[in-house]
Length: 253
Image (cartoon, rainbow, N blue to C red; front, side):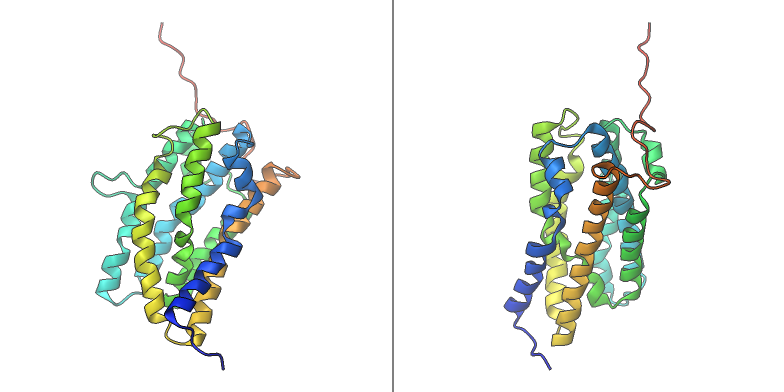
């Protein structure tokens, strides 16, 4: 039987998952951050990523429905408020729709979740089922892709501002806000996993859960690249470039 790793070695093993498998290394992100995406490729990304963004609160609600520890519920429920909004915080979902506005999409169409690629649906729905059905430890470990998110958000802000006319503080507010929200979430989640993975088997399960989550993120970009970059083969039901754009208001005379 394998030996349980020390806390430091276990954390290093979790971080190595990101170093090897996080989706910041995907070719689509290189195109997006480097200003090489067409307007319709950016729009396709916004539409498909919205499906992931709006599903996060459902994933977290599924998690909370299984937690009998009030302290864990109190710590976790702020994640739902961060996305759905609460009080003066309009929430990440609204901020993502603001990005949809900026790239010229009809926000009602984006919010309807029509035009989402089948592979995006399969990947995101699989993540919700994973969190609902697996152990609490595996569910929390899967969220630890947030360990690696601050760098991709910072790179995205810099790249979009440098290369795209739609990019400004308002349209990129989702990413700027996550630079503040994600560290809080990941500090709690990481410590919880380090505390509760108290055997070699549980450590292995936590690492496998984090690997699964990186697969969820990577597969979404694979689908985008295949549908809208090369071979540019959009599957039935996928958003068609040039469609569902926001109406341009005629000037009043």
